[in-house]
Image (cartoon, rainbow, N blue to C red; front, side, top):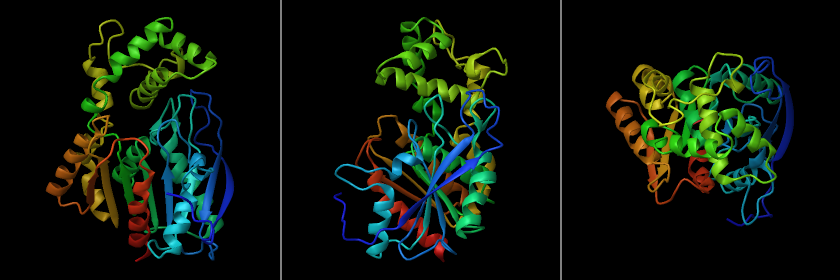
Length: 338
């Protein structure tokens, strides 16, 4: 998608939030967080819906407002959609939730940080008080991959806060999504000294990032999110749900991970989804992380529960699917503008 420079451009404002709820996180991550906020051309934000963009693993909301070669960043995409009448005007927030472990699942964790609380209790009031946007019934959250997972989890756990959610290729169906990740991670740990601590030290000292090591880091970040070790002497609370020598699942540890699988949580929290104005799940039909199977299971469960939602599969993988926002952004803006 080549950018159309003739379109009227909205403004991107920058806020800084000094978080209290992120203080003391075991990763040592900064508590001062930047949030870029897009306001459409011809508006000051007042009374507009608020859409919150949750970036995928290794990403930040700030990356979605950067210059993009041969295409559009998200504000430019919104400019086009709004100018052509495809999308109703909306404010879009891009929080920086990057962590030392490379990403975020946007839920509360005593190791990673209280990220759900940051978004809901600190970021939302900061944006809404400044721009007069959002508010009850006019807030939605969307994202891809880890961001899609975060959007789905916020819809499940906080339907009183959010009126809409879109999950693009989000993590669900953990037994498939993480099927090969643990063995891969153990091999990378063995390559770098044999312990999680030695792996982290090698990763942070490397002059060039390795894709294989980055994937292993993601798995360690999931461990710090879903089942952190309470022992303060354990580096960043990271532990895995498998034995370190034979890669056998440890039942009690894996059970803690599974509590965070949206496919499990929907059984106890699914009724709250019926209050949403908009809920959408999509996934590429050849997603390389097997997430399409979790998405199919989720839509089957939601349909059986009578939860109104939109489900789509598209012919693509997990990668480079920002174009799907041409569907999701207008969908959310319309639902929250009614």
